[in-house]
Image 1 (cartoon, one colour):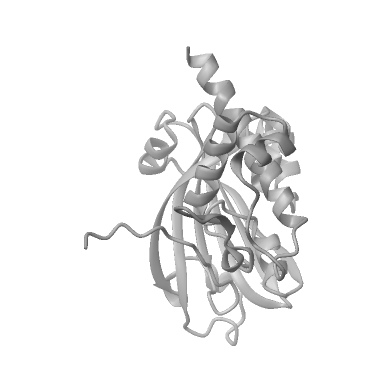
Image 2 (image 1 turned 180 degrees about the horizontal axis):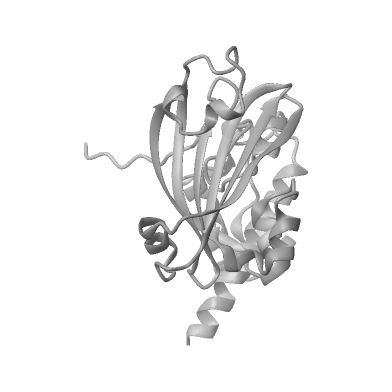
Length: 255
């Protein structure tokens, strides 16, 4: 029974991807109405039950909306969103989507003293040695985001691997995947705000002009792999004058 449920879920996810491809082929200025469920099922080659689940998932994301007795329609406003909050995107992609040229500066990458609170978040022994990796993202040369990621030293292997990682400019997630095969599948994030002057270590990477006090969106969260095991604890400080998050939300109001 569990395997059948998993297979059905995977099939509906694949169907949702195919529906999104179909949406990309539509002339939405001419018509934003999708074909009936049975016709979509025939086009994609899956059952109507699978199509219905895929449509429900897309409706929950805000990609489409369904009107009783009228049909299913593409939400054009959703397609015009440049930066999604969910699913999360890499900063370089977000910067490009916002119309800027991204660049990345590596900050300090170091082993840090034992931190019991972070070890608990990562579910590792409190004696485990940790790595803190700083990275600064720029948009057309302007400060855009500062990231500080914490993870177990064992994630990057031996001393030679650590030395290689300290020069690695691409995604931390990609490096961990290359070494361990672990993919980040989801995260749990706490949302806050902070002034740039209160971000520990940020002044090490910005000059006085760039370091002017500005409000930043502060996201901190634990990233998990497909087995729900913590991989990395991330702290992200984002200049929202450049990256503007948008989200389509379903309303749950009692009238």
